[in-house]
Image (cartoon, rainbow, N blue to C red):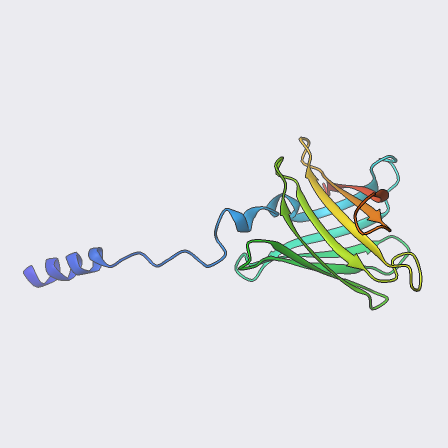
Length: 167
């Protein structure tokens, strides 16, 4: 009897296993984007332009988008919070282009990432791109892509999309 009680005390004294390496609050900063979405231009909310599936993968260490525009080939991104404390995204398009974005939440909690997109506007027309993901009160997500041809001094809107959850 004493032996069983002693073993139970030893068992109770064992430390809890540490949480998974990507279970921090910082790793959850893009969780609001996870889901299945219908995507619309923000200024034309009745014209669906794409489907998108956003998944949290690899024990919470990555967020992946599968972008499926209507009538065109798509692409996708893989996002992760790295040891430098910043979010990194690798976009891969169906034309073989890749773009690396880096960023994190701004003061309002919007995710902002920037990257250099080679040939964005055609051969030799490289652009600096700033993407901002806004978490809307209605549960939708707005992705605003701003384009700069002067290395971030000025921007114009390249795309402005609203992701609405599929029903």
